[in-house]
Every structure is written in C-alpha cells, then in structure tokens.
Length: 124
Image 1 (cartoon, rainbow, N blue to C red):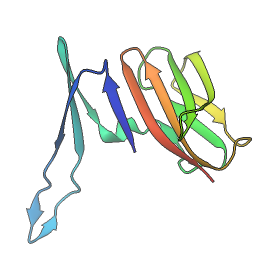
Image 2: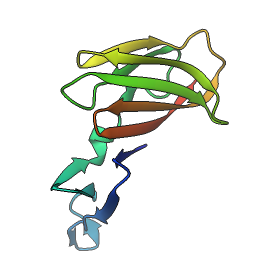
Image 3: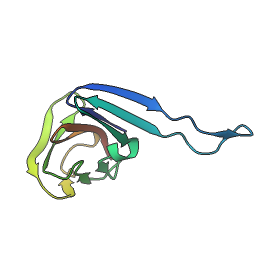
Image 4: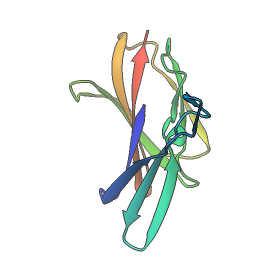
C-alpha cells in the first residue's frame, strides 16, 4: 500500500461507496485521493500509488516512474536508515537488485517533481 503527498499541501481523501444490490456489493469500492495544491486539483487512483513491484520480492524490484520526467528513489529500513538511493532516473521503470540486503521490510520513497510516493516493500 502506498500514499502520495503533493507539496505537503492539503490532501482530501474520499472513499467511493460501492453500489449494493441484495446485500452484495456490485463492485469493490475504490479509493480516490483528491489534492488541493495551489492552482489545480489532481485525482489519483490508489492503484497508481503502487510503484514498487513485485511485492513481496525475493530481490529484483521494479520501480515505476510516477511522472513523465526524471525521478529519484531512496530505500530505507523501517527505523529510517538509508539503504540505497539514486537520483535523476529516466524512463518509465528502473530495476533495483535488493538480493544482497537482509530479508525484511523496507520503505521505498519515489520522488518526481511535486510528487512523493512511499511504498512498503517486503523482501523474502
């Protein structure tokens, strides 16, 4: 699961209500995140917040670019120690080899222009 911050501005989170017929949801509810940041408003589907996959991973991790420009990533332990990072990545996906690191839980922070996305990553 991930979350997105945009310029650390106000983020309004709304959950869509699923239609219910005969007590059974017609579709699973989606999560819509609405950002109010200065001049505009952007809606981001929660699915697009998942930029790190596969998760859990046995070592090879792919990181999606959350924008059309360059981006950076940083991987932290759960206590906040930096494990690895790389700035000025281009393209739509970057491959990261985490196989030499200890099994466990990590936080992957992906930054692009005005967007910061953090995902939990589990190495098994």
